[in-house]
Amino acid sequence: MGINYRRELISLLAFTLVLSTLISGCTFPGKRKEVPQIQMLVNNPLPVERTDEFVVLPVADLREMAPDFSPEAFVVMEAAAKQEIPYQLDDMDNDGEGDEIAMVLNMGPGEQKGIVIRYAPEGPESRSVKLGYNKRTRAAMHPEYEGIGWESELIAYRVYPDYRNSISVFGKQEPGLSLDKFAASTKSRGYDYLEKWGVNVLDGGKSVGCGGFGLWYENKLLKPLNMIRGSSPKPDDMIARYTRVVADGPIRSVAQVVFDKWRVGDETLKVTATYSIFAGQRWTRNQITIEGADSPTKVAAGLMKSEAAALTRDEKNGFFYTWGSQSHRDTPDDLGIALIYPTENLDSFHEDDISDSYLAALNPGADNEIVYWSLAAWSSGELGVRKDTEFAKLVLSVAQKVKHPLTVTIMQTKQQPAKEPPR
Image (cartoon, rainbow, N blue to C red; front, side, top):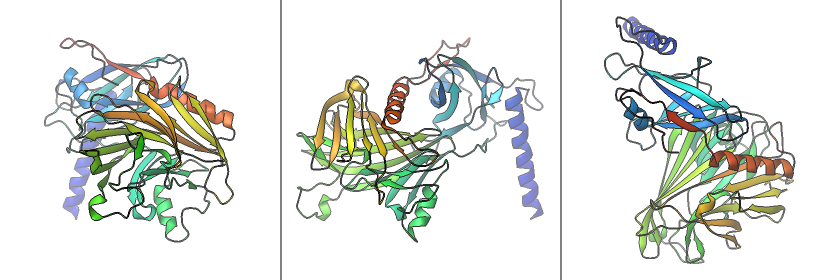
């Protein structure tokens, strides 16, 4: 017991020493070498204030500038204020190594801000640094709510990863993380019972819900079930599906659903849906990747239709939304749901009565991948969006920000020219 305790104490002291060295910029103990660092400029291209705005840095881009960069021991600092910026390292391709650094920061209108990454080079002096930032996002799988969920402190989503492939919404009356509480509450009284930390406000059912999708083939929505509509499913009709939590961090959480052997015409496809949410945000980034197709395959993403909610479309800015008393409460109250898409990828817009959905058919790129965004806002509690005009402003603001993200330029070094990572 004493030996284990002593080892833990030595490990903690080593961690504290490396961490303090990285933050202060001092030399490594016993070394004359200064702490290496990577300098960057972050720019806000919009003339608006941006709070908790996301930045994602590929590790590969950092290593092009600094080949000895170690993702095992680094800190991110705001250069002028000399303050630490919360971040996390994510393994997005499931190969066992971190490949993206995610962070959020505040930016003034048109502001340019210097960022510094201080790191311990790869080698014996490198130590694994894991910092305890305030956890503001969550991704989790719970059988109690039939799927996988993801959330920020403002909103929560879950997807039914079966033939419905529909995204539902948990509304919150106060900030906090709720997915585990939702799962626990279903054991006794279900998730339709109102709590301060949230309640089920939208069940997508047979629709696509809030941001769900299908494939668009022969002018029809194909959900992940290989059968003729109205017939009884057979074992060969069921599409294999897999869910996993890609990231469950303080800054970003990522859920993923993989559909295997999804038949479209004569082709059998693998379709991967990756759902990401950031701290301080209501929106979800939806990335759909299709493998096995000979040519680009259209994706239809959309929103549930409701007679109680009016539809608004803005083709110029690339979004549509509904607002009205469409929540699934016993007495429906106001709920807004929205979908934002890249205008250059829009093929056509549809009202699909079969799935009770508004749909945007989207053309993916040459890599058979498409990214779009969805969001929801409930009218209740301190987090509530009360009016349709307020929700309209929210959707337009989100559309502008996700389409004009913060730009990051890695500063020029003697060895390398300046490089701007891809968005």
